[in-house]
Image (tube, rainbow, N blue to C red; front, top):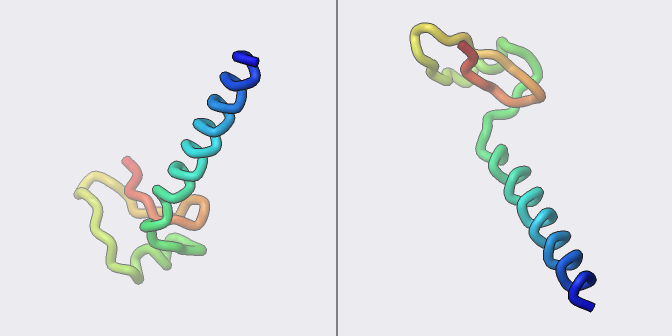
Length: 61
């Protein structure tokens, strides 16, 4: 019985963490190419490059 409760508890935690991890990227700007990121006028540091990766704009070193 205790093993089943531990399994259910661990499963709920993993699902909860997965939901939070997917929601973190909800505020990223969607893009299809690197030019979309420049059109959104996002700002990066001087030594980084603005690029589109997996449909989100990122500043990469």
